[in-house]
Length: 328
Image (cartoon, rainbow, N blue to C red; front, side, top):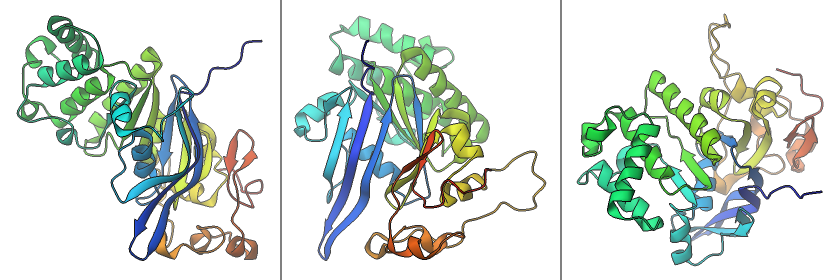
């Protein structure tokens, strides 16, 4: 019997901390997740939950004093979190692509977009100038840039926000990476352009069998795009499972609160429900379950004991009442 292929991305018990003057602050606390080829994993949570920090750790772009202090990150079975910076730079772009929230931060305003894509292609692939330009043109066509033959020689400021994000996606794909980290790729765009970009990500993921980590705070984007979703709170994964299950049958009270914040055209509610309170600071993490000060189902055990992820159906949730939470 043939063994199943290793996940494209495997994160095991990852810890990220910041060494400050007054001690170490743990920002990511033993999270584990996997992404297979052709799969989109949504990573969702409020600001400060640790979503972007997790993506930065995977791609090796943590800003000091932040650093990985425990666990492992494996790409197609190979450990990458302990690689020297030079080797990690070679992996970025070639095996891991990145799409960020503001495309202007990813594009050089002084260079034509075609030149930027050609330079990236030739950095990672053994192609001549003419071959690289032909590939760049193919990528611009693939991501839906109209009149790509002429627009390849335009500068970033000559593109709209949505078109610039398409160029960034072409850049992320140009070396045929195994994994793409997409950090809030649609936040700065209007709703119609958001739908186009998420649709493009889904299509390219399927066609190229690329694994995608989609980091966002927008549950609507997750619902439309992801295959599975990991819900993060205070540096931990509190629920992970198939997107339909987590949205319609959430097993953690925090997940349920996030799902209740998704607007529905079928709902007649005058206002969306909200989760009272705020996420705890890293230097003031409560004992027990970090969510207990905000949880409507909190009981004494939650205040002293921290729940671990346990299987509930096809999902896993870190809640003592996961098996008892009502569906929907």
